[in-house]
Length: 491
Image 1: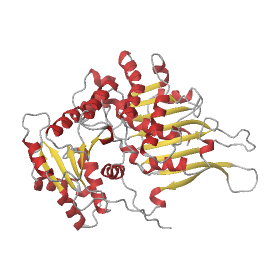
Image 2 (image 1 turned 60 degrees about the vertical axis):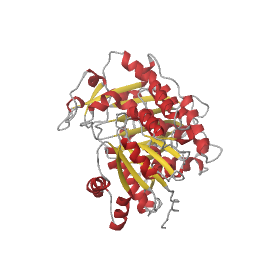
Image 3 (image 1 turned 90 degrees about the vertical axis):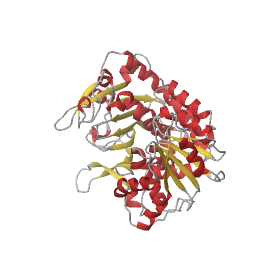
Image 4 (image 1 turned 180 degrees about the vertical axis):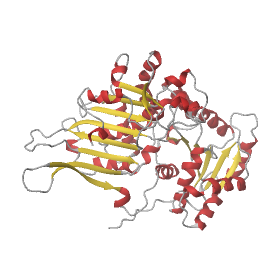
């Protein structure tokens, strides 16, 4: 049966993108905005104003977008594409520099539009967040209807995250600040809440009585070519675990909110982060694993990635892979380990949540296996419930695990929107449900910091693993010590 989604209302706004000519804008933001325009989610008067130091005219910027973005989006209506290009503008602004003329140009473009929603999207490094907010305020461009969107990573640790939050919070109220994590815009993540709280059969078994453990994986086949300068100071723990994986953990483990309300949902997520058992001191070596990929075949190792800055001492210590055994210390999850894993140069690109149920109390059939719920975020979003079934045939009963599968792409005829499309729609509508609050970000850093400190204080280097493999041996031992294995090892 065909299903047609209810179109979202088109919210009128001026969207000002700082870093508007950068990689994130070209790969994600502008394609998402084009799809929103095509689907009628942008009001006719909505403008997209890119800020950069590029010195481009409006025509230059539109030509750049036409050349770099057009091939990455399926354009089936040239008139819509031309309409979208007509929304685009460019202003040269030098944040932190002595030349403030760009702010006057931007002020002229925004004059007489104070009653229109105004969204400042910071697609730039976090060190620029505070200076940008200060300068846009000094230019008189922050109105009561303004919002600011902050891209991750929000700082390097708890101290720097607090400093950024203080700097941004000095200009914008908390209700105006949208800290974005694109994983929360994925259909599977949103369906996790629906699966849990709109279906009666799951909630009674969503606890330690029935669930053995949970695995959350974000694996990438790509390495870090040309990005070592960034990755030396980030690493997998900061880049992926502190935000993406912990967000997935909170949605998996949270209690049912009293209502589908922006603050009620975020309240429950914060409670999960606050309930995480701290991993400190000597426990870090026991409950965490870090690795770095080495060359294999035609794939270079991290230290040999082309186009990158020369390796330094920090390069040898940075992790491109990490696995962690986490615990949520509350009544629902007592004794249930949550295994978090992320890595570069893995043999597959896959992001998923695997809920492993316990075995039946007494099996009367040989060869059975526990049930498993798999929520896949990429590459193909969907949900699989693995149940035991009898193989057809006469004679003895032979069991086989069979997936009951829901593929969003195959089940629903409507195009599945990209994560940034949903999140940008929510930003323009002023809906912060899928964005992180300050206390949520800081609670995540509070749990991550002791692990970072222990790694920094120790002499051990990340465990090497060949590019194209599933990570270092220590990651498999992390589960193997309790008789468990990663999901793909059991397939």
